[in-house]
Image (cartoon, rainbow, N blue to C red; front, side, top):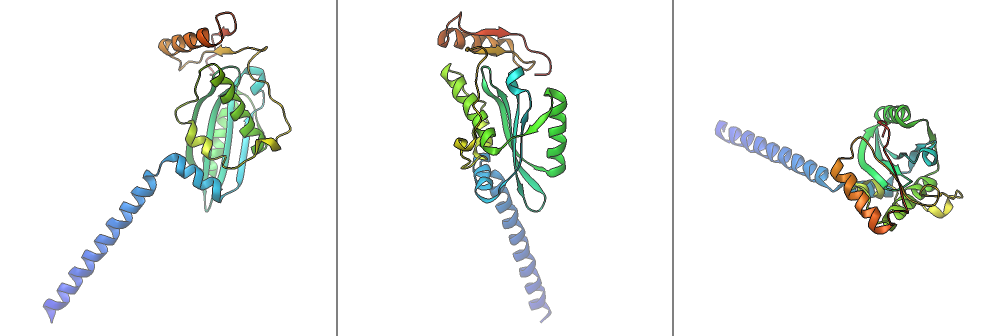
Length: 212
């Protein structure tokens, strides 16, 4: 009888270990889902609770667009875009789950870096991102590699609902403003692309400030 009891206990422990391992494996599988799928899932399930952009984005040429959808109980599916409306389109982007506190801290930090952040409608946020990417692609300049994941968080937001008309480029042509993370090789590559696509006299080039 005692041996049978020990055997049953061992079987229960083994079953428990298997269940724990299965749970961990499932968690890893969910974590391993592509960011695009994670963002798309959030867009289908949760509404937009945060949506902001750099207030003087079209005056300085580069700034941020942020979109967040609250995920109960305490997370926010967040897309962050560094948008160059003068030339490069989406220069940087990422998708991440923040806490509400982390997201508010980020917004405050970005406001300190690039100037005040203001609320915008989700439709206008997407219109800014869409327009900047389309403009850059006219000159052979693709968006950042992580753009698809961040962009997926927009879901089915309709840009036609945004009444604002945005003008991309500066004074009718691309204006390439360098940033501190742009290596000499990257700058040369962009310059070659612009020379070929726009023409040597049809774009401007400015050494950017350290804030970029």
